[in-house]
Length: 442
Image (cartoon, rainbow, N blue to C red):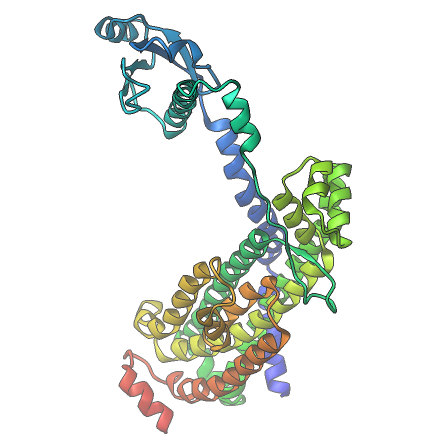
């Protein structure tokens, strides 16, 4: 154990004390936040000036009721389409909107002639306005006074408030399916990246040391098994350190930073939902926020909820990394070049890719039989189980999955060690799967 400890310490210090590790650890949360916010900001500020469009309305019922907005500016183009098209080129306008005479009966009798490429946002803005006008004109044909107001009063927007009756001895607890689904997907993708990136680090480190013949010198005083375990556990501690730092930052954001930035009325609504308020719609109306958004915020700003999810994340990240790092270590010991490892990595990557496919399916039903079995199978559970935990699955499923994961790691270490002890001395030839099987039987 002393030899393993020395190797663990060396692997840990070599990576954690680097400036790149410190910068990555501190900047990654900022980068993740930017990835979430920047697309929204780009959408808000990406559109250019409003496009000027001349309207040729043969029906006489559309042009006067079209309203200009930030995307498009409507002007009258008369009743001559060809003249309007020619004028739009001369005046450097964006184009001409032609509305047919029978537009009310035939909503497809509308054409947009552009002098440059159009955009989906602008076209959606035009079609939605014309659709509203046509619907209003059709309602007039029924000769019912105030029909539009009647239709507006009849229309109902339903918000379904969801509660977990089994949360705490029958106490209702509001939950947001959207929030739990998004959190689960994010956790799954993060675990996929951790397993692939840090597993590759273990493999590349072994290949480099094998090529430099360092391993052949070390094996005179340290057993191959000790070298492999020291390297795996050392890199695991590096990943765990980074995850713990990110977890502390995440909990601080959830418990301190976000509550101080949000308006007081929204935080009051969040506090009411967290306290067990059942009339979510009424609370949301008082806070002037969408009920679904308020429910999602109440979950994301609950430090205990976030800490519980993160604890599960750490457990399965550790078990998953140990399992896959053992396989990556065996691959690294079997080849001399990183390029030669691609074929041997295929059996490792297949379960991870399959887990990513199932991860998307969790949005439909996190408690399906497919989700259950993929969260129990050790080769996919490190990704699927943490993604299911935010939905509130039974504790026995989490415990069973974790036990099977670490038991499989113990078995995989035995398999990887048999390949490792022979592979580190093999040079000049990439082994086949048949040869790897022969090494396991030695």
